[in-house]
Image 1 (tube, helix red, strand yellow):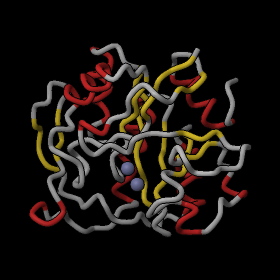
Image 2 (image 1 turned 180 degrees about the vertical axis):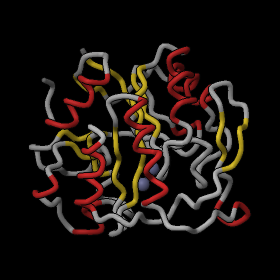
Image 3 (image 1 turned 180 degrees about the horizontal axis):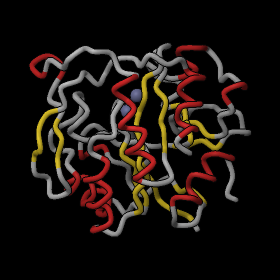
Image 4 (image 1 turned 135 degrees about the vertical axis):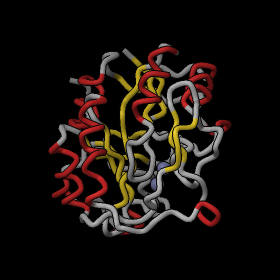
Amino acid sequence: MKLAYDLHLHSCLSPCASEDMTPQNVCRMARLNGLDLIALTDHNTGGNLKAFDQAAREHGLLFLPGMELCTAEEVHLLAYFPSLEAALEADARLPHLRGSMKNRPDYFGQQTLVDHRDRVLGQEEAFLLGALATSLEETVSWITSFHGVAVPAHIHRSYGLVQVLGFIPQSAGFRAVEAGPKDQIDENYLVLHSSDAHELGLIAQKEHLISAEKNLDSIISTLQYGITV
Ligand SMILES: [Zn+2]
Ligand SMILES: [Zn+2]
């Protein structure tokens, strides 16, 4: 089947995102926009995944747990996981890869942890916008070790794979990439067009569709192999 998706969304936990990007608000907007499938991809954290997973379920959306990781080369890499459990397992390991820098909310913005009813649980203290200690290839292996799949984010923009390295390294084994609708991409890649929304008004409309069954295993396989299997 064809699923209308937005697989790159930030919540109020990302310091650069609006405080309105709460589970209920994002899910309501996604439904209004006619989407079937959304992913949450906060910077270097999965801290709000559980809340979004529950809210998405209530709103009848398929929810793909994700993160947007910043590699040591400062390449943004989307990580998608086949289950909330796998994503939370990965999240529990992230403090080892992040530096010890603390967030400065006055300068970088709030990093708000919420529950599925949008109630504030607290602030994440670790600074989430820095680069992880792992290289691109190490980060890909790290994601794979949790049965996840890595998809380079906005490859032609700042912090994008092609912008930073100048090319897509074959050795990393990417089959799917995220790019702008007008970007020219080798036809061997599955090209995703997600919003990278940091505010509610920028969440995708029903314009881009992915061919997959309406379950996470099928979505992960599609991203892993670049085709519907
Ligand atoms: Zn990014
Ligand atoms: Zn992003």
